[in-house]
Length: 129
Ligand SMILES: [Fe+2]
Ligand SMILES: [Fe+2]
Image (spheres, rainbow, N blue to C red):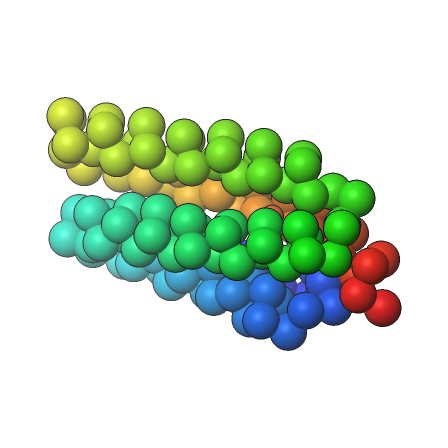
């Protein structure tokens, strides 16, 4: 997935963090396609959950400070996303790496990021500009 201007939120830091999430997802997809997914899946899951958590906290604070209209829904969707990742971590710890599961998670992450940022995060623009 590639970041483009339709994802711009008006906050440079938030945009940089989104770009990083897109980049991480893309890099891991390449890794999976090259057949090295098993060696790196645990790192990907760790990074994704830690980075998403930090990004969500930063963005929620930003929306709260500026009384963004999507602040509440933003928080709720973040919470659901973290649960999806946590569930995946628990499954991975139980059954180990499965290529199809890893691809399915990546598709889910990409779809979620695109939809969430375009509907919810971009509303920051309305209060920042
Ligand atoms: Fe968000
Ligand atoms: Fe975000």
